[in-house]
Length: 345
Ligand SMILES: [Zn+2]
Ligand SMILES: [Zn+2]
Image (tube, helix red, strand yellow):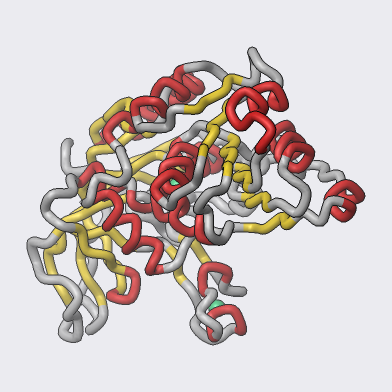
């Protein structure tokens, strides 16, 4: 079978590797269908991901597949079913794992970054990480469950959003899905911002996120006043991985408010800690997701509470994986989710 190997930043090589061997009792063999290319993949492709220093890397952490074979103890799925799986390989015995916070396992390795990902025709996953997908969810939508789960998890980190005004900084796939989750979870008003072009804000509006601001044209405090009036905002999500977004959210959130950090930062941002202390802000991290977040993402997509179609802006066959990256570089923020069709040669 074919495997796409990121041999070194900027280079992808296809290798013919043997099919996975005999399955262990808790393992499942997937025929990979779609892989979404994500912002963190692009950091890795450019050799700029803060936590990926060793190459080669087999990428692919947002994917969907068809179950083709199951181990003797597998009850969660049957051959022929649609599925996706969490890419988190955890130890199960460190303190965070023991208290159920395995998304921050002290020995966490993430497939597609440090451990091998799904950029190959067939891929073996373990039963504890598999998530089944109903028939009315397409393979493309199923490959978006991973970023949607980030939205599910981060919005729960913020506590009850009912009646709260929310700002999401960053209009990429993750920011968009956080905003959609915030709306679905009962936030009063949700403002999505970008510091880049209008393209992603147009996609956001197609996804039902009506309040948007382009901070290259409007200052953040003006945008917040335009949307929230005197009410201000109580919760901010940083999904841009940018200094400007951190600064705006911390300076702008209501006293005692909450800012959730979701973005990946190529450079460590500066935070005004004195201001944070004096205004009793809650600044919380949010790391990936847990199993229930994946399941909630499936439910929200299946029930149409999340609109995913406008997020997918291009598609490439498996053999053109490298072209997909070049296309993304060329398009800049005029593309959003690019899908690799692994089943298409
Ligand atoms: Zn991703
Ligand atoms: Zn652990």
